[in-house]
Image 1 (cartoon, rainbow, N blue to C red):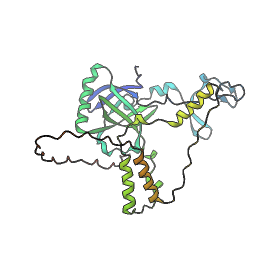
Image 2: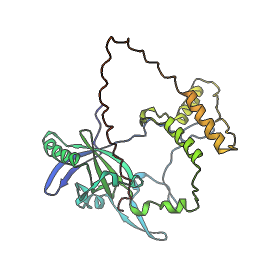
Image 3: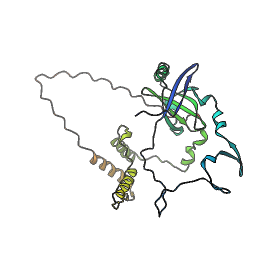
Length: 299
């Protein structure tokens, strides 16, 4: 199914401009949504605009107003908004390149897929894509979306880019304000070892497709049972007992995790050979480079 572009313009790197288009990368269409009904008639309630002097008014008579003082507004019409354009209204000008590891997840907001706009743009698009991929860099720039100029970060993904809008620095709260009352004491070696073993036990590759919204599923069951005229069965979450002893809780967690894992498959032994081959020299293990710690991105 063809996806409709939400924005079209240019991606500009110095003097090189490439026509591009943006597609929203996420959707909420699968969520269950409720409409507001009157409790007696079960008719859907219409939210109609109301003026204190005129009563109910038509939406065609509504205009946009900004309150600059209490109960005083300045009116801005659609024609004036359409004429209001700055460079980033139609052009995403790459301002700098940064290391991907330096991006702070707290600033990441809404993602968009970026693709070349037409076959002619693919050559220029491919050069920028390959250069950024080789250098392992992300680009930052600005673009106007929904009547706001947003700072964005652009990263390589498959055959295109993911452009993510960034929150402004004044929109991100300081972690220190939330963590100021925390006092971390160094745990004893045995307790720490048990916690690390539990982490190792639950280690697995990240797979977002395995996540299922159980609340939405339970909500769908309620809706479907009502459609069938049945009385819905409402499940309650099990009550958790209080943890009396941390060490006991860690041990029990480790035992339950081991019990839930399927038994390892036994390997079939190969038949003994007439002559024993000389074992090959062990190869040195490949060094694993640790990813650098994330730093806070510049606001």
